[in-house]
Every structure is written in structure tokens, then in C-alpha cells.
Image (cartoon, rainbow, N blue to C red; front, side, top):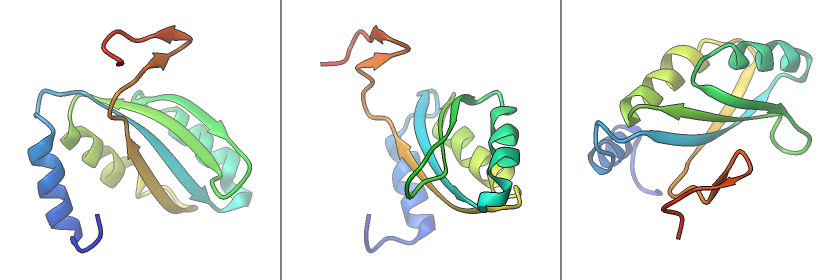
Length: 110
């Protein structure tokens, strides 16, 4: 959301997501190419990471992650991803409505 600083965005998202509401996100990582395999293995070791892929294109690593709350996701990014050497940039896409996961239609997906 253009025009908001990081603290304002955090406040907006924290108020939108109930503390008990689970969060599914797709994280796109740009990394130092020489370190891609090491970084992918490190990200794969986190229990929150459900799927991790080394990909071609503008993004180097794509991972699907699950959290019990928005604050857990924030902590993950700040305390687990940020310290990893070789990660140049991250983009987090929070899932609004899943329609199909692991090859199965998800109830509630309109």
C-alpha cells in the first residue's frame, strides 16, 4: 500500500488479521545465486515452510509458509529469514482465499 511506512502497514495488517487467524503466505526470495542451494536448504529446515522451490526468472526461491497468526509471520520474517546471508530481497504474498491445495479442492473457496 503506497504512502504507508512499515509501522503503519504493520498496524493495518495486525488489526485486519485476528490474532487467532492462521496465515498462509507465498514468499518470493531473491538471493545471491552462488548461495541459492544453501539458502533453499536453510529455508526448508523451518517447520513453517511447507513447500520450497528453486525457480527461474526474477525470483530465485518460492516458498509456501503457514503460521498461526500474522504476528508469527512477522516474527518468522524478522528473526529467521532476515539473518540468512545471501537473501537480497523478499516479497510476501498473503493468501486471501485458498481454492485448491495439495491437489484437493478446499471447502470455503468460492
